[in-house]
Amino acid sequence: MMEVKCLEFNFLPVNTYVIWDETREAAVIDPGCFYPGENEQLASFISSKGLTVKLLLNTHLHFDHVFGNKFVEQTYGVKARANDQDMPWIRSIGARLSVFGIEYKGEVNPILPENILHEGDAVTFGNTTLHVLQVPGHSPGSVIFWNKEQKTVFTGDVIFQGSYGRTDFPDGNHEALMTGIRTKILTMPSDTVLYTGHGPATTVGMEKRFY
Image (cartoon, rainbow, N blue to C red; front, side, top):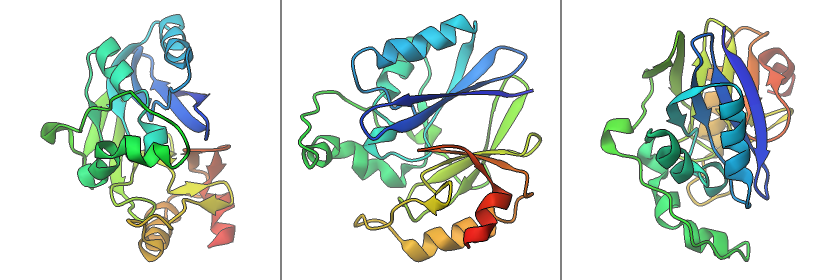
């Protein structure tokens, strides 16, 4: 049985998820650790539960979702997995943050070729399997992670409670996002829980009212 812990990090703020099952193996999704102490907060929770981190997953590579990637990689000996269509956001992270008046001296490692995720892939830890669905539009490389057995989805910024991810970035695509939401998320069972990248969780049934 998969368990879920949401930790809220950085100035936007972003939902970072630690998920695990009865084997105590775990995955970290979208580590947004930015401020001093946030890395330690994440590590402290993982340690308190006696978890072994097997996966580091990114729903997309916008800066607020990847600040803690390098810390997780170095601390737990894992490499981030994501779709590579968002790689320009990693390459230009300093310039993009300067728009917010933030000087960023950190680094985020690129996604290695062997760790690129595509539609139809599956990732596993312990007795848990997450299926990968590509839902571009908020960003070209946005993916969601679906646990079919527990009717649970980690959506990143694809969909929120009563809303959806912004598409006004130069690489955004509103039509593609709406199509993906309608055909890949809203076709799931109504009681499927959607753990979003920002804000509270919701369900497919609740979100069907808005589309």
